[in-house]
Image (cartoon, rainbow, N blue to C red; front, side):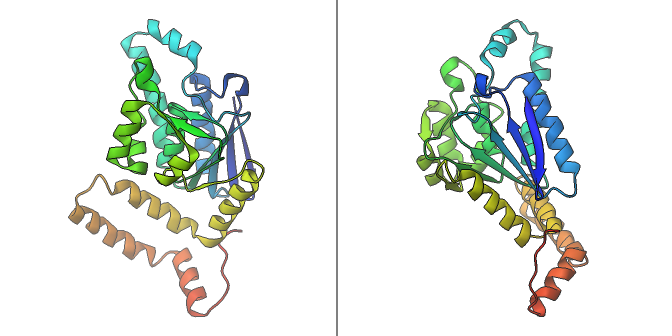
Length: 257
């Protein structure tokens, strides 16, 4: 249900249920968690990209599975929800650079997947929707990640209305980083990933992402105390020594390889 490949330090996870519009079911969620964990542990991977086969990025929860859930016990539903939480949180907290490449529609949990990524690119014809409230469901899992992307007011708008928004509107909301034509999407996203790999330190990216994830959980003074320690530790890393030496001596520097 999910394929994985590594090319030039970019690990790509591709949703492979085009006949079901790449709808999320337990098997696909489990596959994503597994492959994400493998890429996360691979030191040769600098960027994790999520894309899809077919003309829909992800249509959210599988309809047949939604019907089956009606007969689940509370414990079974809770266990299922925890799996989805593990996927979203694992993607959000990844120490690698994460990219969502959206070609086609991203709905409900599919839109949530993109909101968990550091960078999001979409094609002009893509649309995004958190349609849960329109079928009597609650978009509980996605709201914290969406709010981090677009802010409180727009999160309320999108989650309470369940309305569709275009790639252009998502770009204006700063949910997306850019919109690329379908015919150049693959090349543009890989070019972006390649530039990130060449221009940024893997140690610094890992530490910066970890600190960003702590911002909302610590008071200002506690965060600054932690930041002081991280700042001091960073100065002695090999990446920092290499970067400062290149800067001071005006030497070219690329981080990949």
